[in-house]
Amino acid sequence: MAKPFLDVLKGDRRDPPPIWLMRQAGRYLPEYRELRAKAGGFLDLCYTPEFAVEVTLQPIERYGFDAAILFSDILVIPDGLGQDVSFVEGTGPVLKPIRSATEADLLSMDGLQKTLAPVYEAVSRLTGRLGAETALVGFAGAPWTVACYMVEGRTSRDFHAVKSFCYSDPEGFGRLMDLLVEATVAHLSAQVEAGVDAVQIFESHAGVLPEPEFMTWVVEPIRQIVAALREKWPNLPIIGFPRGAGPMYVPFAENTGVTAVSLDTSVSLDWAMDALPVGMPVQGNIDPVFLLTGGNEMDRAVERIIDACRSRPHIFNLGHGVDKQTDPKTVQRLVSKVREFSS
Ligand code: 1CP
Image 1: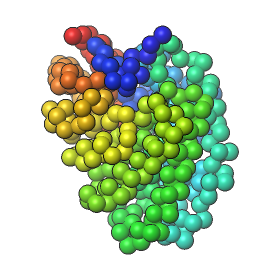
Image 2 (image 1 turned 90 degrees about the horizontal axis):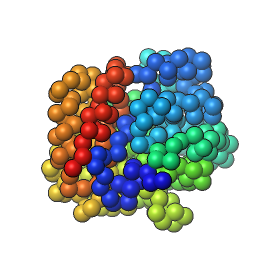
Image 3 (image 1 turned 90 degrees about the vertical axis):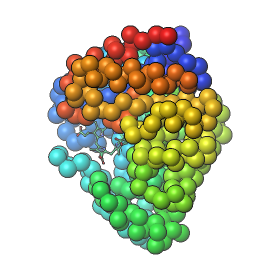
Image 4 (image 1 turned 120 degrees about the vertical axis):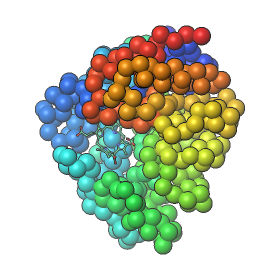
């Protein structure tokens, strides 16, 4: 049976548009919080296939989304490369920061497949658990975004450490980025081999670089990843999410080779319909804060977005992840509202 999400990525329009949400599994769901408490650490949750499978399925069971996204995190790559990674309650991710090429050179691909094997096991179990109309999406963080966490050591506001590294030693930083390209290709390839239907590359910190550095550290590494995947799977659907890229969404869409782009909340849809490559599918882009307020205002935002995207294949999604304060009932209202639509 056809999967509407994949049809749209092939370039067809569907009315109503297929829908899934970034961070659709997570803390806003009581069943997630319950399982999270049982699992112990966040990485234990990611590396225990039976938990990862269950958490992935929770939002599908509740809302019947058109796509399930593998429950994991972008920071399993630094963990697999040998960096110390932990998730601290109330703080978020904490990594032992890498501040020089010498420190980066200590990382290696040797343990990656072994550390990440449970992730691929979760994928292969999931393929037997989803309905015929539901797609399975694998993902990875893009090298620049992952490097931000590896160098800063935590969530950052100013990105001084990572920018200082790449501006002052582009050659040394380039070695770290080459390793991340290789690790990302290996990680996404293993997910495809285990059975995901499509992949999304999260470039959450695309918006912090000047244009020349954006081309070097955002566009070029993603272009290499897409090219390596396409060599093995010419038709693999790949969604790129260069959050905050603004007008640089256009060179991103034109030069990386991705199938589709996920639009963040701040992107003007009229502009995007006009400026992006002809026929390229888009995903997005309701402000997740509408899900905190709900009501008629949210309904109107849904209508506006669906109307604005009528000239392209469109997948309904958020402009960023579901906030943990979101009421699960508001998500239900959003899904119902999107599904009321037809041409
Ligand atoms: O303790 C918890 O429960 C932690 C919350 C949490 C969750 C639910 C984290 C820690 N990661 C995740 C899952 C997750 N992360 C998914 C799963 C699938 C889904 O979407 O349902 C995905 C795709 C991610 C991706 C991710 N992790 C990104 C890229 C997307 C984005 O939000 O910009 C980033 C930047 C991370 C890093 C991360 N992981 C977790 C936290 C708290 C953070 C830091 C976020 C930040 O810097 O603001």
